[in-house]
Image (cartoon, rainbow, N blue to C red; front, side):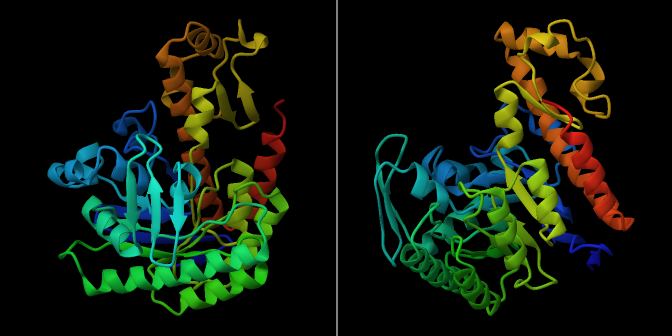
Length: 371
């Protein structure tokens, strides 16, 4: 059942997985290496995370699939009993691998860790994600860089469609053995070319994927271009299926995407910024290492109810960073993750009350106060 906001395309939804329900719009903390950096899984769950994202490329290379299988799957290995979404690792192959060779058959690449050579087909990725046991799985796709030529974008888009069809067929045929219910999302590519996005969306919606992702955004494009891609593509996707904007993670971008009908988001921003001394607050970003916070005994954000804000001052957290104490990174990362999850909660509440447009306006007016 989907409830839509009266003044925008923002909507409420619910996705029921084998490991629990996910209310959308939702933000997914990123646990690239089967962990959200610097945080206990317990604290991520207590902060309100309904689902966590992990990455197939990284866990495939380290610790490797034999270890994951012996552990009983990714949930047991990382001690996380809520839903998990695993990215296919396609973006990481194209951005991290030392050397790579792409063909219609699949991708050949060298590990960025030890230089070992690997070759993965779309079917291989489906088998890996089956063994991981994640609740939402993504097919292998080719993500174009920005900017790129139309010819390059079209070749990558056609290959993504072909790989998506092969992935869907392989999963439906159940090759590799039986598995619990896993939701497979199709990924719309096409770079910044609207007509290519249209073609890709049309081809993928003809297949009965469980949800649809908008890939290849937030790879260097200006914000207005990202918003146009999200808005135009969302209109082409089935109303009753979840829509996932891959890699979208700044507060203002999440609000703009929700307004355009997107449901799911992930980004490493909360913990990456936290480790580097920046806190997200209701009045904007705070760089805790700045001198004015030396004797600032206020909490990071008076409107925040996270563990960090309930117990510690800006001055103390600044001290921890200056003393190179690990606790500083943890407290700031925890606050940021809570901030993003709380933003998603407030977005859902505003849509429920048909007040999303007002919420967005008020949030951004306050958020831009900080230097």
